[in-house]
Every structure is written in structure tokens, then in C-alpha cells.
Image 1: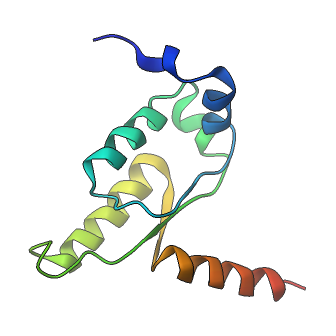
Image 2 (image 1 turned 90 degrees about the vertical axis):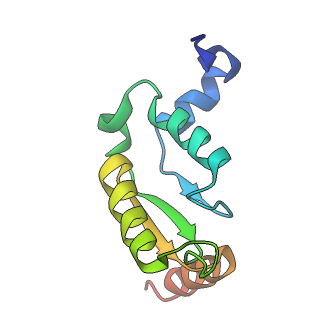
Length: 109
């Protein structure tokens, strides 16, 4: 399999490995997200460098009808992303996340 790292500029690779990550607007179970997520995990420096930063994903609850067992899916996603990449999941829309973040920022004094 060809190494696709050559398609990602070095400055982007460095930012992915040396900063906190915030995932907004992705379904964590979406195939495209999973491919991108795996590429991020495979960056040089791996878990050791990523563990120095907080990472968050804003995620809408798994939908009834789309997912057979939404509660079980939610628990699985929390466990997987916490163990695999130390990513905390915020359960809510990106708008809810931004609103809560702003409230916390303004109330931090």
C-alpha cells in the first residue's frame, strides 16, 4: 500500500501531531470520518505526542432508527475514542458545544 503522507503538507502533519484537536460536524461512525481519523492516528509521534493535548469531538446522539441500539453505540463510541486517541466526546450539536464553550469562557474569572 502506498504511503499517503506525501499528500499532506508537512505543516499540516505537524499541526495534527502537535496541537489539540476539535472535531465538529462529523458523525463518528461515518466511513469518511473514520478514514480521516485513522490517518490522524497514524501521524508520526502517535499517541505520545497527542496525549499532551486535550481533544474533543462534538457528537450528536446516535439516532433511533439509524442505529439499532443507540445507547450501546454511544457507550462504544465513548470507550473507543477515549482509549484509542484520548478524545473526549461532547454529546450535542456543534452549536450546543460552541454555546457551552462560550458560557464557560465568559464565566472563567
